[in-house]
Amino acid sequence: MPADPPAPHAPDIPSAAEARPLVRLGQGDFTREVWPEDLGGARRHRPPTHQENPMSLLDTVITATTPAPPKMIVYGTPGVGKTTFARSAGALLIDCENGAGAVPGLTRTPYLRSWPEVHAWLEELASRPPANLGVVAVDTLDWLVQRIVEYVVMDLDKKGRGEVTNTLSSAHGGYFKAREIVHNIVNRDLLPLLNAITDRGIAVVLLAHAANTKMTTPEGFDVRLAAPDIPQWIAPTFIEWADAVLFAWREADGARVLTTEGTSTVTAKNRYALPPRLELSWDAVAAAIQREPAPSPAA
Image (cartoon, rainbow, N blue to C red; front, side, top):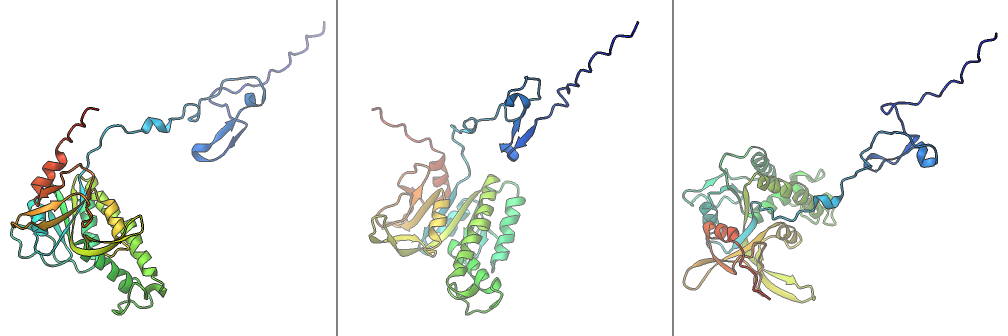
């Protein structure tokens, strides 16, 4: 009797570990896999992918406050006590001006004559800060900007390297291209370094001289305001970066105070609901920042 014919061979069905999609479309996190069942075929087991249960961006929404060391600009007329304010904070002073030698009890760097020297100190403080350092102060912001400008127009200009007659309008081929390079250094190097210092739990205070500056309001009117003595083409970058811009001045009775809110004659702001006027001392500012805001009156 002839033998029974062999049963037809059943196709091999890959295991879950061997399962593969027909094709992958897209790239990176936006990859989409096409499986046979997506084309109308029989369903089969397939391994889950990270696309099946994606994390919603709404899961990352922050509802709690996140206190951080303050970033502030304190500016005022010469002799009002800006450097003494830094000393009262126990700050390490980044000395760009060489005018703090007469202030007793102040911890400061050597006089830093160039942007690369300042950069080296900021990089050191961002990566390896001393233990128990609470505040870093720059003396002064206007001289720090000047150091960056000198570096751009004298050191970086290949055709006029070291040329003292170079200016922001003439260096790097003219047309104020040097000004854009200064902007790049501030936005891509200086401010990230200062942010890295605050990420270490250290407050940053930029001291500055005051100037009577012409400002144009959003309505188009020109007004005169007390403001930090830095070029107006770079000033908004620093003012927007800072959590507080405080104006230091002396009252008629000799009291040294800080204005914390902008007025028709003074550039100032703060993100801490500070009282409009404070004593010019670090303890007063720190206590006001840590103070719980007053509850809103009942409707």
